[in-house]
Length: 230
Image (cartoon, rainbow, N blue to C red; front, side, top):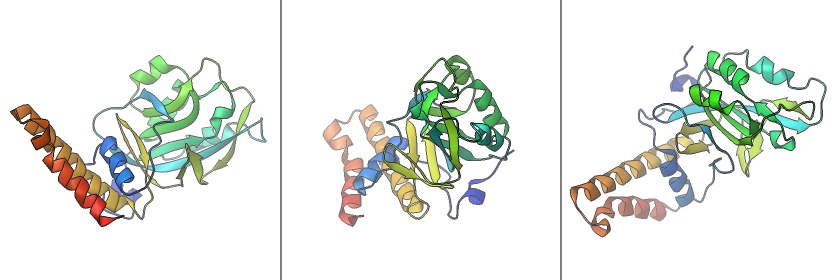
């Protein structure tokens, strides 16, 4: 079960994605936000290079609600190829709202990541599975009846960052960053240049150059991005 990036987004996705750290720096240079890490921290950083997935949003709220966590389980029966589950508002309970069973279900439906504003459990099992998972904390118990799914598919907010259904989300072993579809092409292209410049700095340092000279490629990219005033 696979979905190509061209099917997920209305723009061309670069063949090689930038590192999340480079994209976060470029967001700062553009006067924007978007990183969800922190407040979320890693429980499974995931395999290989960065991936760009489409957000599938779930908003939780306190109390048992009418259907509990049923809508989340129903969602995990849908085609989730190339998607990142973004669960907000689950920090209202001390128990875990995500664990081994939901991770296994998400992987089976093609999801590429889960971002959980709330607790997760079964961490040793999560570390053996291939789904990228960033969450607030670890807990032993389940959520009980203290939380329910309030909405699926609406805009959510984590750490002051708004994420809408279908928004591009970049995940790698360094973090998770949400982008808006209209600005994503420019930001990804700039971050790719920034990332390549950082790689040239590292190559220069390994070759024996001192940092002031080796840093020049990155300094040039930073100056160019600042001059654009985006």
